[in-house]
Length: 78
Image (cartoon, rainbow, N blue to C red):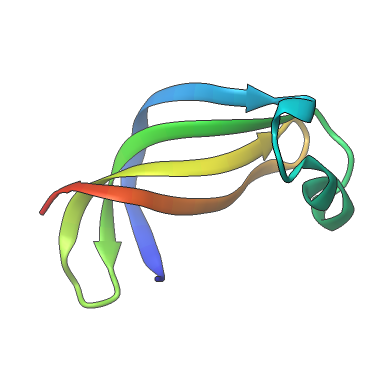
């Protein structure tokens, strides 16, 4: 499902760092070596059909590489 993040992601927490991330080897092969962290937070998003809602978002981030592969974990409210 494609979506657009509207505004900022808030309440950001680190879920896992380094080897604790299940997909860390794939991330390193795809984007490069770095200190990878898996993050979660909440944000306002716009879905493809135009619906605007609050959702919990999960993604990966590494210093010098940036945020990658942000996905919707679940929708909180519409």
